[in-house]
Length: 394
Image 1 (spheres, rainbow, N blue to C red):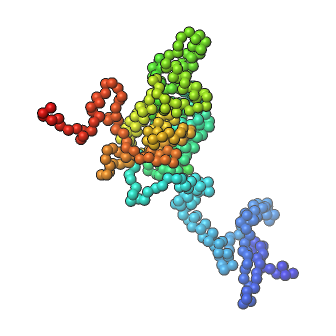
Image 2 (cartoon, rainbow, N blue to C red):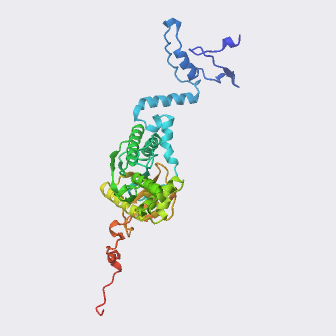
Image 3 (cartoon, rainbow, N blue to C red):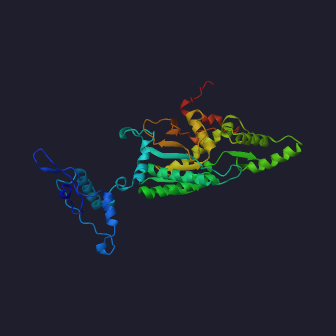
């Protein structure tokens, strides 16, 4: 009988009471049904309304019996409804979006304080292409490679801010082109999800960022584009064995047999002098020439360049002084070009970052680099400030 005398709320839910030391009754539990139970009852048909769900009664105003956490929750819900879409995204987005927005804040990059921060003229990403269907021809990306590039674009969308400019360039190969296009699509999807507005310069091929070249009897071509000619001619020599193989075929054979044997053909190219392959130094030279051109054309923009692992690795080796290893698919070497200051001498400063190693360098001036030709004017490479006037007695 004692339970039948317990007080109830308008919905029929009992709430327990207890007597304080002064003899007054105080509540020890909330009088409303839990939210999941209230929603369940709202969905149940009511015989008195011809099977339609019952209309919930308006909630009772907060009083001393309402728990404090419930009062605060109702207060925040009312404020959010009044604000609407004016709330910041991180407050009105779901958990997955909030985690994606904060994920980039947990990287290993250390940001300098505002007073010590140097002005970055260009933030460059030299990105290796996604997984390709093969290297025997100029193949495109596999579905896995397309997903890798698309995911890279969505990750890039978290790092940029509204108002920035992103310029896409790529090597003139199918796998590099598709990588740049997929990164562009992923960036567009991420910008829509994270509600950012930027200026995008659409992907376009640029010859300075091509793969290292090979000199075949048909002329200069990509190392993968020369595979068919090499493979067909090699088979003829192996069948007939009537003469010695030409040098270009020997060097190409060494390169591809390293690949087929599970070795590192790029290391072979970086460390062994090859007379028919474009030298790594020349790849680094034209990459910097391309970056200098884009920096003058798009000052202040982020430059996303989809290219090939060999040249990216050569750029990293020239800056770091050692070989950090082959980049994975869609892994990048990041270069930051800084603005000139009164303390800058000898050229523009830059940093090259790859696999947790950052190296400060001077951006090479292409017009002052030697061509390594017998027709070079070697006297022009001396510093004019170091030259002295010849003695009149000589």
